[in-house]
Image (tube, rainbow, N blue to C red):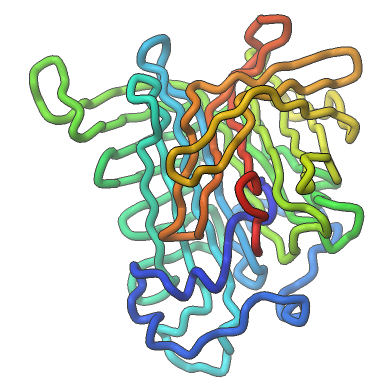
Length: 377
């Protein structure tokens, strides 16, 4: 949830081959209940901009997340770009500029129905002299030639230069930040310690250039260049909390509706698939609340089994809200992200349509975690 407790496993961080000098460092303590006092608590407070557009390095985890749909008809493409920051338990007493106190990771993926699978890439590094950096005054993250920046005009610029594709885009907000929960204090369980600071920028207007390498175009060139437009969703969230007791993972959606409104919903899920905690947050085109509730039923239908992880995910969902039933229909089946060489493990991050009685209401993204193994934080 892009939302809260993103897949950040500190033990895995220390084994990253993209940061080879980490292997020579002393083994750091794993995150535990005893380490809770190291990180600031999350407590109710209003978010303040532009400061809260920037990073919050004292907190355990933080992520900046953009997803969206580009193109129309046969050229429809889903995209995901996520930057993660993690504060480690490395002691502040180490004076070295190379001490891995802050680690950065990024994932990017294109959902291409014509190919039937994701084109995915990931990078990792530590903040410091090597060039990985984040801003504490505004949205600004750079890592291994990838970047996400907010401009003075309140535009978001993304640049992803991967081996199999490139993505360059500009996303323009149509409304002020939507503060989740209570003025940006978003609970993720029955206790205050299961919370994050969280805001969204839905209904972004996007123009993008996509390069698909090793994809022969109509002129026989070994690269396809696409200039596309579409809509996107941006989340920024930071926290020091753990997954609530009994939860193995979560299901989350961010949907841009065709009427200009937006819908964010999630549930924390136990091993039997039952909801332990949930939220439904429907906003109008100005970001004002239309409906907020915690009794939405997520009903899975069908199954899709990944040939890589061998995890089994729901093929689609129905969301039952009062006397209404809304369906989530994926752009394609295989939208699993293999993040074993960065943040660890597998998760599903997929472009979906939202329908009611067969009528298209909106487009967005669905995230599924904890289906093959419990999320370990």
